[in-house]
Length: 340
Image 1 (cartoon, rainbow, N blue to C red):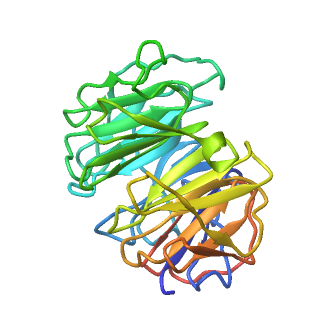
Image 2: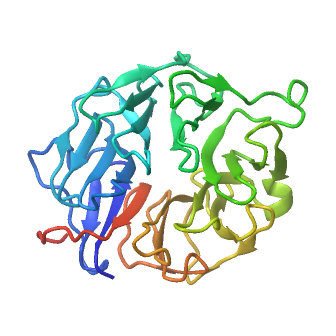
Image 3: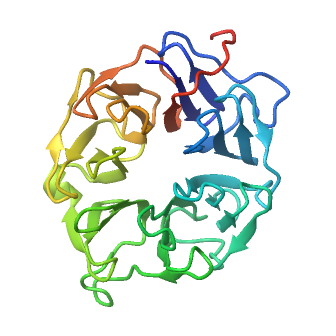
């Protein structure tokens, strides 16, 4: 595989390999991103594979050499932790960034590639039930209708915009107030599939919700009843398809995990095969349109898994990491540096 694997961690910044995982390099000193930083999310530019953004414990940083060196993107988020990033695939100068614990949770947007940023509504409470300080775990731009955007807050609900982020409405509720809606406020992940029919999949802590009428009504799949374990961490669309991967475990950090695959818009799921039992819950998936068959998965306690058949089978990489928070790869080859 030619390209660069990037692994974001809580405590070792971003590690990278440009030789198919044979060797790995940590960040050098004197960069905007510390070598021992907490990095929560990664985003590869859809048209410039050398360009990668990282959301960290000190704001937003950008690499123009596939993760070797990093520069600060000056923004109102400089003193905040960024938990989620979304680049509009049809207009890449538009990006969303969601912040959260230990800093204040808020949603930010740029429409000029990061030169300027603005904070968007709503005003998110400083504290919430369950996790104390909320964090925006997921944000997404609908590639099929880019005026539609979504974000989800851990213990703070599901939010939707129909005007490219200018205004937002909260669309989750309780079973009493919203019997056919998303009835859990602990939102982990949102994915939009083209279909037909167009489908929105939302992962909450203990269930999956699927809507095929743009969020008016939802069908709930209870994770414990359906999969035998409850902690529903994330779903990921495989590039160029409507196929999905689901990462689910027995808790956080968990002691066991399963990766499942759906080819029917999230209606049914099939187990995939791991060559080695993972040591904790799957925490991240990494894909790129340049090779839809190649997928990476990272666990909470640092196992890195690889699939070369679009997530049907997995093998564990030799290198283990600290807590993996995100993983991706880009077809751009990072310049060689000393491995560690």
